[in-house]
Length: 140
Image 1 (cartoon, rainbow, N blue to C red):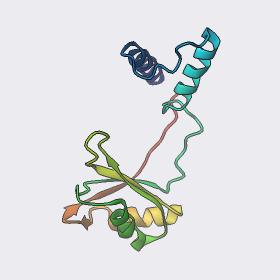
Image 2 (tube, rainbow, N blue to C red; image 1 turned 180 degrees about the vertical axis):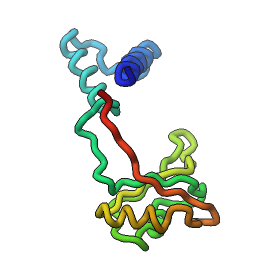
Image 3 (tube, rainbow, N blue to C red; image 1 turned 180 degrees about the horizontal axis):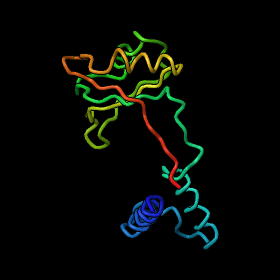
């Protein structure tokens, strides 16, 4: 049921975008070419029922971040517990300001677990942060 909602929503957004005149990528193409383009558009979207998406346990969700914090600050804080593969703070797409949360990928599961144990409820830039493992489940 959830995957159906996501699929229907994705279809509606594509139709809305074309009806407003944005992203008219399919104009002037034959029916088959337009369907192929639409299909490619949908394949890049996040899918709830995608069974190939999996978290080996080294991806962490971090909340409570200060708006002054940078990706580099986040990486530095987590590097005290191991090798950081990636650290990124989620920004508002219009204002480019921090949304107050981010994601950190550690090199190993053991390092990620150490981050959860020692950095959850720690203080970073004057704010208490929470660190959790991202839970991804396949619908079905």
